[in-house]
Image (cartoon, rainbow, N blue to C red; front, top):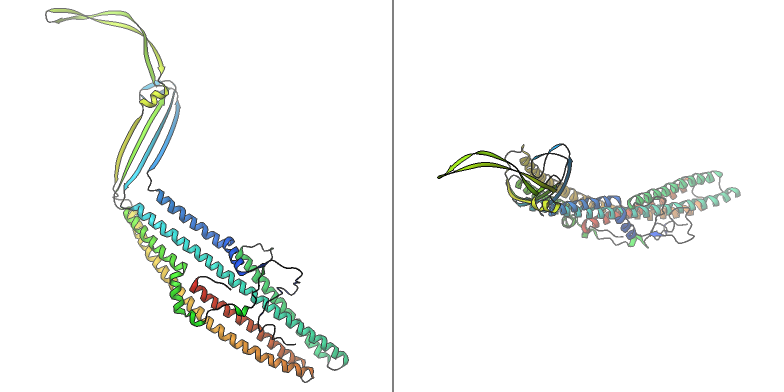
Length: 485
């Protein structure tokens, strides 16, 4: 039995685990479905969405700060004993209930463009958060594709291990017959039984790798671990479209990445944000002009109206005589008794009578504030420098990653070619060994060794092929900021 027809073409894989029985169609996950689900549920993306919303709220608030302020107040009080009448400011000895209301407004007339620069800084910061959200989505999409390829690779290795186990079992069954017939020694059977144990361990390890890679995928998807995940296998892995190496020259990829990489774009926007923040802090060091106004009215039950009801003369007192010209007049002091009716001034009248308005302008001139404003300006200037260094570092890392990915892709392609030649050579050696073993011209140990070499060569070829696909897709991702299988 030849093994080359199994791993050589890497066709559709029908078993995810050794004990999987295809009794009915299963719900499968394509790469696109996996990416779409992750974009909606991945925790890293959801956290970045929250950061973007916070930046949006900060921007909205800074815009609304340009609108004049308007505040209202209502106050009520009750006091007994000797009090000051809040309306007449005179002392009264009675219980006083009073109520007042006020409306105040204020507006920034000029502050050396502090608000405009603050709005611009927050706008660039919001745009930077949008780019960081784009980066998070791109990173998750790439990580999903990587995990998807890893599951396919591990599943293919399970398939190869299953074939190896079946082949060893067939050889063991045939050897048992020969041992019974006395054609071969019993040691041959023992050697094959030991090989079957080794092959079984390899199969269990391969199955565990599938489980581990599937759990990693579920974590990226934020998918419940008890929910099944079965990848939709492409018809032919070898036909996945890949760019040529000359189409992903590292310098060309880096040039494209500098213009469309979300992290670099975010760095540029954050530099602009810090520059505008620097201008806003400088504006705080200059005078600012504000206007304010207030309207007030009040009511108190102590405010009274006294209306005379009747008047009666009660006494006359002689004061003296006054000469006016040639006449002499008597001066008298007349005393009257008034009968007054006292009533509380109606609420509407008090509100109208006590209504007052005020308007003012204020010029604030910073002179000495504990060096706070100057320190803020210096910090803002350093923030610009720090962000420029961050962008320089990110650019350097991006370029290094691209050159490293290109070197790895070239190496992976060479490994794949070497692994393919190794499979061809091992297959020929195994075919010759099978004929010699069947004729009794090769012992079991040598035959098993030849068989193991072929198995390892096939595993190496599959791993090299998937490694090359991954490396090329990584370069494609750097260039286009998207990935597809």
